Length: 443
Image (cartoon, rainbow, N blue to C red):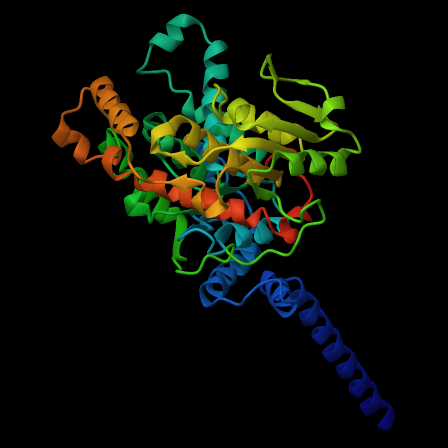
């Protein structure tokens, strides 16, 4: 009898200890635990809204770990399957919106880095849409001309969506922002096919869903996308008056200790020498080959590029050029940076695209500017900006009254983009950012 009771006691103890061990191991793997560990180390500051988002992300991780893609929609599959064969078919993603620096992207990346049970892609939304349009173009090239002209029966969206869904089941978008009419017109059809194929989306943005593409051209054709987004994503408001990037950075381990200096090209030469053991005079231009063409910019040694504002922001560079630069170089040093304003809107927009691309790939940016960082962008209107606006109105055939109802005057998305660029530029001065590994392409 004593032996029997002892055996029962030992087995019960082993079971309890095993259960505690497994529960502890599971807890240690949660995103919330990792976040709290960073808080204890002093690297993060605990935030109530961030904790709410983390709870949703942990639940989503559990759902995706048990993910089973929807079955084929063929007649036979519908005939021999139940109406809902798996709860994973209705896994909802997340759409998180809020001000700059509130932690949206950081927490999405923490989730992404811990998500290994499904195929995944993490990218800037603008880059994703460029890729979609490239896929559409490539598909058109495979078709006879008569098919392309037959608009009623020709639609490349299902084919492109099917290819994307075959490559990834989790899409994580940074900066979900719709500003292009070509994107707006296809979003509903594209994501309807992606969601039907079981793709789950997490996106960060600055606007709540109802305000996406607000006052945009032909917005009525875009509006059906909004209920589709809401039906497939939990919508979370992360708005905060706190920008956690705007903290006092610790000195960097480079000459001068800072990666943003005022009117001091000489210190950039010293930083270049520190990073490469080579003087700028001994560096050489190196062409980058991509998309069937070449780009030659600045002087470089290995993964370090020295260039000027005129070369990198005043020319004709676009998103694909900045992506090529970000893939090739881990450090980019820019001399002779001026104060930006609405008067040089083209350069300002290129700067914003460059910042988003470099930040997305953890490129270390060093700038010598004629003004302090807080003054790098001035939003005061100028005669040139007014002239640009008038020309744009003429191109679009808009009256003054029509233009006043559009983003041409409010510029809300553009103002947010500028705030985001400044916030990210500030974070790029931090030692934690400089410790990040260089991402040659979107994760």
